[in-house]
Length: 158
Image (cartoon, rainbow, N blue to C red; front, side, top):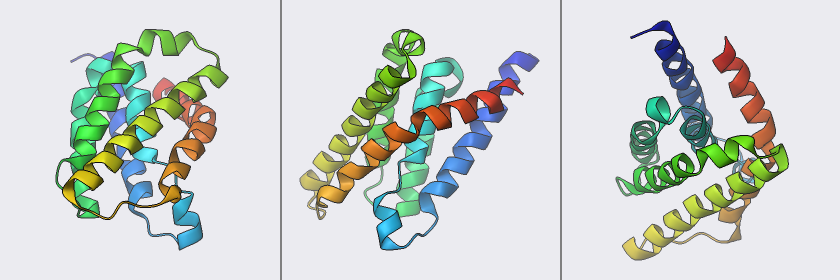
């Protein structure tokens, strides 16, 4: 393994662990409703930038970790995250040349798809389906995408 292959793996691991920590840190209710899906954003970033290093395997492992930490249906987040990572991998070459506004709108579509899959699984398994607050996370995630992508670009360039 060359140094070029190792750098994305190190950056990917650090960013995924940081996003996982941000996903489970307890927050008061008003702030928790506005919490973006940091782990989904990081997985989408690595699926678009380096799909061989951080594509479907990262999505599945990160999703399973999120399932275990939240104590919900095992595989729910892993399934949704893997589907969104596969979709991001398919359109990655187009997304990389989009302007930041178009990238944010594409990320909004990915995040809304992720939430819809979770919504569907919750309904199918009989779990309580949350209200409108579930749909705040995709909007907030799309709004912070430019800052997060810039931060991860800097981390990856080191």
